[in-house]
Image (tube, rainbow, N blue to C red; front, side, top):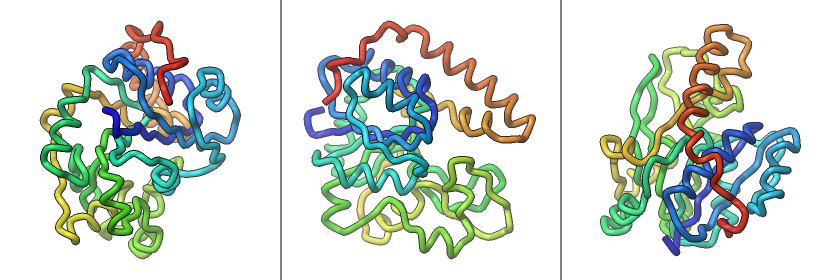
Length: 245
């Protein structure tokens, strides 16, 4: 995967971020390119990243979607694998990357539609999304479009605590505007929702739900945290230093 950079955006989840990276390295020998856009308001995650020599951009208080554009602007490989911090890798994703390249795709991952009671524009979920950065650059495409987000009242989906009123309108979620732009240009998008769970497991929303003041969300977040840490345990001795460029 010589022309691929891993890109992730972290927010006050040092243990989660490190566990995710260890699980990746356990299944992918050699050195890899990585960029972390680090949005935390404190230094805990940045201290861990510095201690392990991991390249990162300090962006205190930043939010996920605009931070992806910041990351893409600081990457020079043709391809990017955008990942969330709250995933655990279960296998080598090289077969997925081979598929992405062989089919000449611009985006590939789990294409999601409306869910959770919301009427949503489709997106390629950002927890594991292959991106042809060169194609985005060629067409002047950005990951985040604030104008469309505001015009549909979708701002809640884009905060660090993503709680959104359901006002009956159709909303954008993180990644939706980019997919809309790609489809409008006739660019190719790959759907791998059926095979993706073989490679990665997504523990969605555990950190922000625990930070909410909603008791059932907090309890849900704690349960998911426990499952995540149990899945991460086999990788706790994986060494990070020297494995990322």
